[in-house]
Length: 349
Image (cartoon, rainbow, N blue to C red; front, side, top):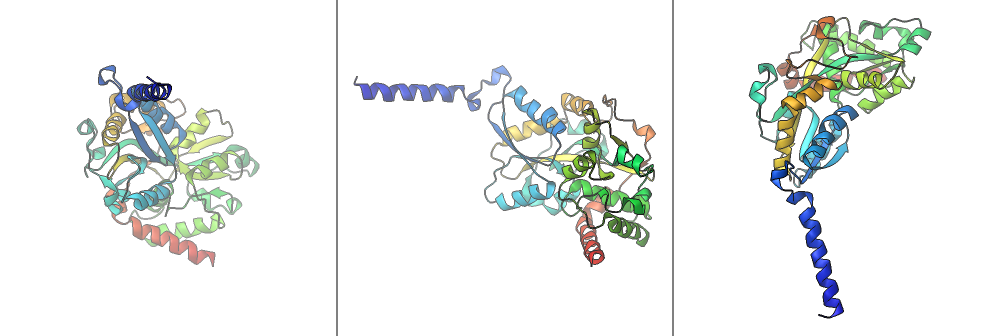
């Protein structure tokens, strides 16, 4: 055997050994799935680390994550739908998103979905609710004290002292900002979402933003923490996460007019290249283990029989709850977003 042939033979053997050790050939008897999972997600670090990467590490799945806002996720999925690159949209999914983008996803009902409370089950057959996300205000207590304020409500956001010092996202591109818009319309109006009373409040609120509408959800809570804004109009997960991680200059405020909790969901992308792993991940999200992890983080599980264990989260019994008409809001999402966009443009002139 000449030297060149020996070298080529050695290379082939090495390549074969590497393939045999790769994740795609993981022995199913060892409890590992192997392979990959490509994920697009607007979720915060707590969910990414505690659920996604935990699952990938536990089952030997290579996770490829692209973090971006919900609007960016939808735009990317639309651009790629002829040649899908992602397997799962992790978070940022709800009935409204699905109704307006049905061709981007494929049907799947996760194992154990029938064990969830009926209101949180997969009624469309396309997306899996796995946690409850609440709207709240995040207050920088140092700046609040300097201004002599005590922020407890949405009504307090109209205080002229706060003009230009409120962090708010864009409801036309951010799911959490849209949830805040509909929460405000519900509790500050007559509950119909299109009444004058509710939109009069929104107009005054927009004026007090002083043309400052942020492009990402993370900028809202991070910039409030860093002192650029007095109060952020945001959601519970990252708010509690900052406090859990040691932020002493923040407090979470659940508006005294009422705070809405909505199910947050994940879905499989139409034509997902790694379909089996995508299905397995959704199964995990609503499993007993997955839901217990959710309860230990800064979220509230959809399996309401599992109590939260984060000491920085107060129980529902201490919060004024409001209940959104999820189906109506989903069906009217484009109209509500258009009215917000038109109102902002009109007031800017």
